[in-house]
Image 1 (cartoon, helix red, strand yellow):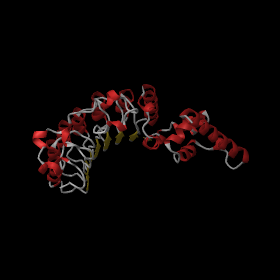
Image 2 (tube, rainbow, N blue to C red):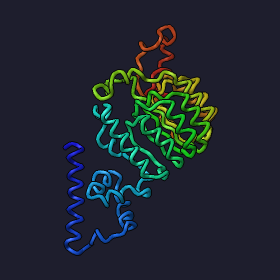
Image 3 (cartoon, one colour):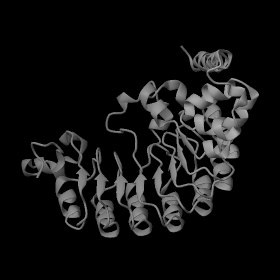
Length: 321
């Protein structure tokens, strides 16, 4: 069943429920005040309001646009439950997400504080920057058409951001990390994960090949920006980052308040690099280390040919130092 049919069914069910209640005398929805309807609809999820309640009638549609009901837009659970699909990466789906986000931004009247969705673009985020000064959470992973230019707007106009997830957003570079860190002083959680470039086969057929090949190479530049401009971070995720020991050392020096660090898939740092970095992170509570097998043929044979270096480049539990 596609999204459109499901939406029609939800709207029909909501309409029948309201009609049945009104006809039985159990509850006359037409007599409820706007405040009562807002209270009732606040108990529905964003998806239930968007696909059901707001399609029942004009009055309910207007209630669903109340700023109190549009302070949060969270569609992450929808993407997690559906799994990544090829259609998510096409322009038409991106336009639908943009239209939805723009509608919520307008309805929020400046009250929007949390955005959790995927596959949006500069078209909608530029409006977020202009109209959402109270934004605290911005999670926009898998958004290939969000750029540094719009992130610059976000940084200057949404200084209250505490949590940022720009995972799999390859048009966002270390320049955005610099401007975000400089202006959003409340930032405590950053997720900058990349797609698995060690085994891209798991994404083939879903993520466009040209996008897989565009994986950012400047891991150390990003690490340097995080280290210098985000010293207050408590939570940092850098899965499959291409940073080296140099970048990791900078983070351990500049972000000493870190409590959680995720380095899953970071193939260019060794167990010794990680152990050395952790020594500086006195407040660290949890760390996720790389845990995979890297054939010696991937690296220069002269440098890593000796068997004494075996455990240095093989990030497995058996050989971890």
